[in-house]
Amino acid sequence: MKPLQVTQAQQDPQSHTDCIDQASDKSIVVPNKHVTIADSFKGEHSWFITTHIPTDFSIQVQETTYNVHKFPLISKCGYLGRLEVQPLISNSGKELNLENFPGGSKTFETILKFCYGFPIDFNPENVAALRCAAEFLEMTEELEDGNLISKSEAFLTFVVLASWKDTITVLKSCETLSPWAENLQIVRRCCDSIAWKATKDELTCEDAAPNQETWWFNDVADFRIDHFMRIISAIRAKGTKPEIIGKCIMQYAKRWLPGMDMELEGIRGYGHGKSSLEFSIFTGRKKESTGHSKDQRTIIENLVSIIPPQQGAVSCKFLLQILKLARMYSVSQALTSYLEKRISTVLEDAEVNDLLIPRYQNEEMANMPNSSDECTMHDVDVVQRIVEYFLMHEQQQMQQQPKLARFNISRLLDNYLAEISRDPNLSITKFQVLAELLPENTRTCDDGLYRAIDTYLKTHPSLTEHDRRRLCKTMNCEKLSLDGCTHAAQNDRLPLRTVVQVLFSEQVKMRAAMQEKEQEQSGINSEQDENQTSASMDIKTLKSELEHVKSKMIELQKDYFELQREYEKLNKPKNSTGWSLNWRKIKNSFHVKPAGDEIGDEQDVPKSPESVQQKGTPRRRTSMS
Image (cartoon, rainbow, N blue to C red; front, side, top):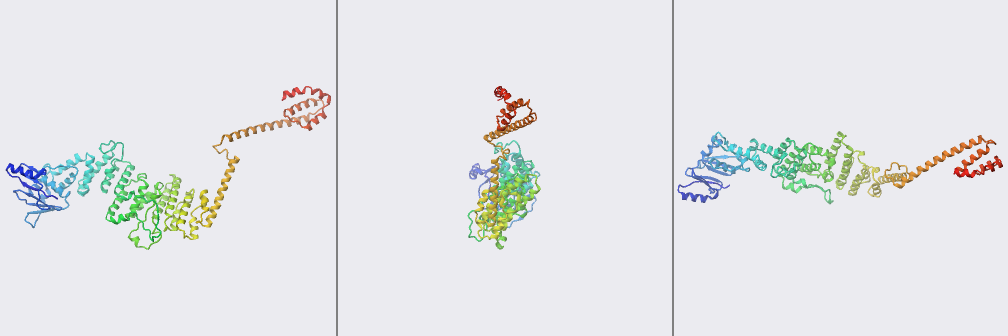
């Protein structure tokens, strides 16, 4: 800190001009007192007043000592007027040590200039510190009109809070002024002003882009976590949408939590020679910044506490990333349980890479004897609890389309099992528990589970036959597709009993497929087929016409037999010629000439009348035909 020196000006005008030249452009001249403040030094951490009037007071702020006159300060600072100073061992007079002075030595120098009658320049960078320092020194209106408290308060109220940039700057400067800025309501007023400007319909800020709801995210994300929480609380009180608040929280987490943008792409390139698979994607970072982990843990806890309770406020991916960091920084068990329950409500939106939560080992776990479950790369217990919470939540919300959610969860869990099955230290019990978490009717197809089982058998070639059978019991061979059955039937890693079941299932599926083809060919399901071809439609029409002709033919045959019976009943000699003629007309209309009937007719009818009647017969036959 550069000390300042106050010197009394000479009466000679020439000497007065020389003094101003030596003071450079930072010199300030007060004509009535002929006192000049210049950048001259006496001592490394001292501030002296060298005039004809000796200094009688010494004040120490931080590492700087200020030798000043008592009267200018006491006339404006009530704190110094009523304070009882301690005698100094040196011959400089009295000394006062101001501990925890708001704003430090730089702010105190500005106040000294104000006490000596020099004007000061208020700006957003120093107004909050001057307001707190004035309150510390009790520079009220009772001592002097226009004292520092009233001037700084007026600038803060009428100038700063009317501007977005100035409000942001003042609130940022309040981070080093606790608890004075909190007690004087500077933080509260700045947060309310920011919230009002961020939520109003018509944006007047010069930095605000038109028709954009997130223009204020970057400015708000630069604050300390306690001030950020105050702003979010004020914005929520204004009725802002939970989705907007959630986006702002995710932006802040991305800004202050470096691990949010790092993802795990599954297990790649395992080192099978390692005896212990302790895994941490931030191991080096944690060792280098052990003290910083406490701040990270505080940020995580506060961010989780202000997440809106609405389901769509934040994404499932964000919640899983926060959960990973919470476990890495050893956040409380209650908070991690809350995150797991919150993730279970939106688990259908998760991805496999998001569920790959590393297993972090602290000192207590490192001292415990190693087991296969403790040496796994991923923490499968967390995923197991999340799925269990999901099933409990689904039972309470059965009316909200549970089947679709279960289908998505079954596919997600099968893909997760396929990823973690590459871990050599994953026990068969843990794999089986995860595979059997979902109800049996959840999976419509077990191809994904079969792929996970096959990957586990490939990674663990030393499994016994009993363990292989135990593992394959989690799979239903009847739910395998035809391609899955074909692959499983040729898989040497599966036990013999499972292969037999797969072959039987494949045979049943092939037989069912053949029956479906036969039914399609026979036309049993033709009425249910909506995409019939034009040829099949024509064939169907011709068949219907043929059936109609057959029915007409049957009716005519019935009439024929009735007429024949009537003929036999009425067969008399006198009328034999007429009935014979009618009978032949009907017979010729059908184009049927049975030989037996003609012979019978010739025997019954006399020749002479018949020869006479046959002369007119051809004409009638022609007309009949």
